[in-house]
Image (cartoon, rainbow, N blue to C red; front, side, top):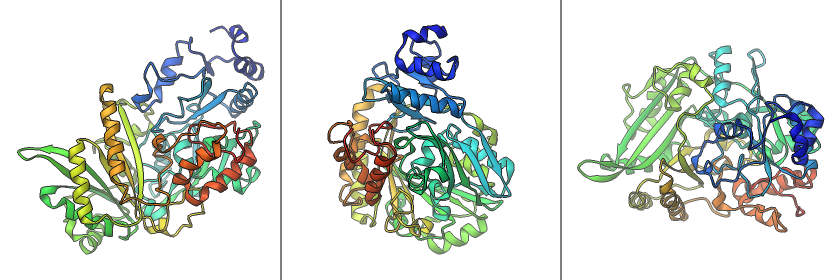
Length: 507
């Protein structure tokens, strides 16, 4: 599109052109041939890549901080909503779709510089980088340092960290946000702020409260953590006929209190086996910060029922464990972590819960029966305890600390759009069925397992009341502090989405 043509466009494009000059490779209108591929490149859920999916007026792809400043100022002046996307892994697509009629997508993918300082044990990473790129850069600098982030390498740093991301080292080192020491962001007035200039309240808010409610996150500076040169992984699978129910029951009492170097994730899903038909398979997927001899010493003593043996345990480097947990085969080179493209993007739905008490064994029997009836929906239990129980619930906006045994993800994926109604129903049915066992008053949820079933803010007269519905599930007693900070730094509620932090006064 010719640059002069923007003067006939909406005020936003004209404003942006006046501020930064040429918009080539920065702004894409729907008529631009690069618009569709740019939009689709970081859509990670095909549910939100339909012809009926709301599309942005523009996609803007800044390559400098000055571009981000101009985009925020012009969008605010033009009264057009900004959706901020770093990796596109948000499960409800709210970083690139909207319930509002006019919006733009601010895509951070050009801002992905990473620098690692081994001496200071710090990494500086821009919001548009992906977690795999961060892990790779740390590994290239040192085989004794790591960062405790999530297992999926194509997650964008901006959303993953600001939402309180976690990974297989959370019991030893906590969440991503527990290891952030500085940040850069653009606020509603177009100013670039760091920790010192934004102040401790705002710095607190963007470490688990979701950055997109407060501004545009530009970068995080994170502490690196020690990892041994050898770590150990294992995957042990059992079906109901192999006492899976007993093992799941034991896991509840062991996984949150075992050696905090050991993280045993539990994946439960219905499967079809011959000749018996449907059964439940429980997969115990573990990462241990130590060698296999140390690991077996722990499991033999604390969880002998699982029967982990030396043939199950695989020793490897930390970076190899990153590949293992991301389901790459054992011949894959770490360079795959630099591949920002996801080859297989299907349809999916996620929901979440927290547990404060173990599920009675009779309850497990009922749950597994329900899952087999529903057909496909599975769940993942991620154990807490360790350092998670030692960090105060108010230290960051992420509140689910002491007293919470594990987090549950409800997970269902499919490839045929026609299956959506059935599979969404399966997710919601199992969620309803789990009500007696999940946390209460309120029933908790995890921000990075975004779920608009638990409430949507339409930014109307009741925005605080609407926001409180999902806000207290995500943030418990930290919600009102987040609202207070939001009201102070963005009183007109410019940075908003379907589940953003509201202001105390309606927009």
